[in-house]
Length: 282
Image: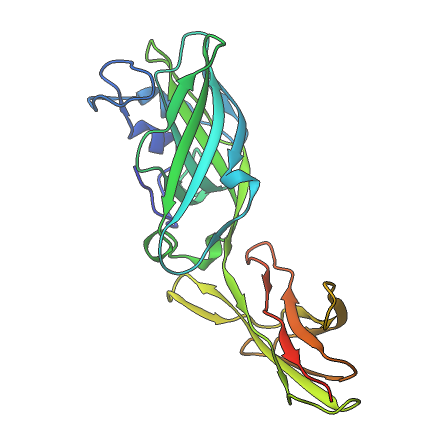
């Protein structure tokens, strides 16, 4: 089931109410879709609240790394977690959502669901299951609003073998960020020792509304240099991008080596490092 990012996504409780309860409670396999789980909408929740006896823990989203999205293709994100219920675990559901209150449409700015039910396997400990959910995120269709970059929460719900519902709307958090690109070009090359080198570059990031990469304005990037034969880069100065994302500065050529720009990233945009551009000093 997929819920695309939207300004008015149905609330977390309502989202799960739309999910079908399996006709038969078989472990982690949806065998039918005939009964609505009204208990999810009969009670309101607030962030970090949970409902039911099933407990979710040990959640890891995307291997603990940020989810970085460009403008095209598909990003597959794996989420692993533990579900525990003395009455057994029939099936679980997983969502990534953003907002302040999962019980209201106004409190949600975005939501993403899985295409298939998570796969859960019972461990040697009765009632304890290890689960894996797979999110296939398509930036071109799922991420229509640039404002949804930032912190997202993991919403997990499930049913025990007696069809009792549980959920927790804040099991773990992750960052969904826009991909960025960075270039560097040092000229002239070759250059005489002691002469000035101009290093230009451009920092761009994904724009989910236009489906293109655009210059990232007024952002700091470090100009770094690595001497030929060395493995270590040294920061020379910090430069800010202009109104189109362009970087430009000068430095003095002393020895052969590589120049590059490094962008540390922000809460909404991934870090980027330009390939080193070699300059021959004569």
